[in-house]
Amino acid sequence: MDLASACIAVLETADPHTKAMAARKVARDWRLGRLVHIFNAMPPDRPARPDLPELLPPNRMPKRGKGGSARSQIALIHALAHIEFVAIDLAFDLVARFGGDYPPAFADDWLRVGADEAMHFALLDRRLKELGSFYGALPAHDGLWEAASETAHDAGARLAIVPLVLEARALDITPQTIERFTSFGDLKTARSLTRIMSDEVFHVRAGMKWFRWTMNRMGANPQESYQMLVKRHFRGRLKAPFNDSTRSQAGLTRDFYEPLAG
Image 1: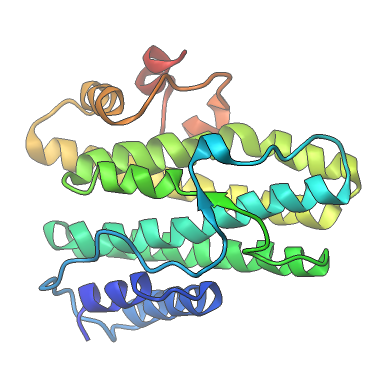
Image 2: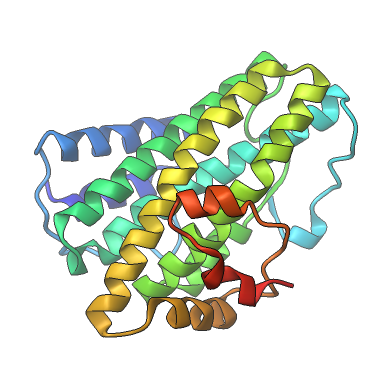
């Protein structure tokens, strides 16, 4: 089977658990040499979605509330699970849409990312069930996929926005989220988020690696191009404070993002 078709099959799978399993299988099949590096098919404009969760505009999302109540705890885990669910599609769309323009090492990295996102989703969904809920029990928003739609025409723009803005933001806020769950006494979720954050460092590093590769191939300055693409495709300024040390560990240095801070 060709790699593009395998990735598209993941995108066209609506059921969350089946999608996560399919994502991990495609990554494994690629790693074992069972898929060929051929791209004769284009991915859908939008991936298949389950009936639940209900998708709302970001400004219509209910407030999660604060404090350590079970309700607010579940709402936060549900929001994180939704991010990881959509991130599966972001990784497989990236490979299906742009992989033909890159060497096989591009697929190596982004299929690993997609498999990571599937594992992250499974961890958080399992935690929701342990707390008496499930993925789909609450509404979610579609802002992450809007970023994919905005950059569907341009691999450089996709890399600038998804791993190097959205995933980099996770490096900034996840430490506080871990502290929050620890303060609730929910050490199990805190441990899962610690594991997830470790993987996200690799995801941002892969974004930086392939963004630089893309800009160098075009003869463009990576730093200047990043700032131009973020201004063009990301609404608003980047939010400080930044986790500079972890961003730097991932190869995303302050000279790239500080000029864009609001």
